[in-house]
Image (cartoon, rainbow, N blue to C red):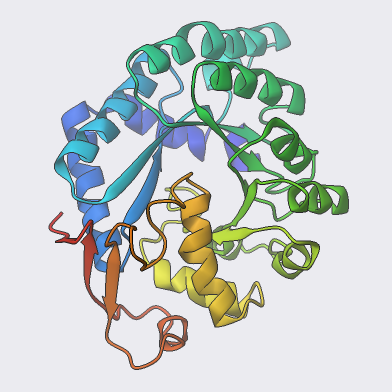
Length: 316
């Protein structure tokens, strides 16, 4: 947050994305998708959120749309125009309100009309978007036909998990600072708690999301890489399984479930992928190991031999 306040972090990435063409972004993303697939990933949620203007957010989402057509990975597009308040709108409270209105009245209608996203996401955190702002943006997004996600209670608890449950979000992501009421709210809802242990590790934070408390309360948890330039620059999803076991104290079975069935549920895909069963997509990763417990055991090592999506060998 201190880095962002000084114009770095997300804002640095925003300046970079704004300066690049769609073709440049496409080639960069395609190369990264190849690395994700090489580590066994078959389904990728790709978020915008580094344009923070109408033109640049749409540019990012159009690149994702091109990737959906050209790459045989399962790609889910998410509009994250509410990732941060851009620097040009941070001067006053009035200017901040103008950006929220731009999201609601200009950006979201374009995303809806051009059918560029499946989900809308908001970074609900003190210093970013408030609970009230998040509720307004997500309510409008739901009315526009988008499913909902939240960056929730990542660094400070602010009631975002409770909002996610109340508003019917498909997932609440991060949750390192979730409160006890937030845990209870998620446990009583259908919202998946998506945990991102790579982020807390990379930031040097001593506290991870309370996975065991969430499970004990009855919440469904998923694991994800949170692959992004600022806080989790890793394409190695098996490493996330390692962190799920070593840092979140999951059993290997719980980690695999969080990475497959529950990961699919966190993207509204649980009826088509996430398990090897009759009637489901043949999304498969093959590993050079004799026991599933070896996948998180060989931390940092690439043991994936090949991946298939819908029965087709991935060739990104």
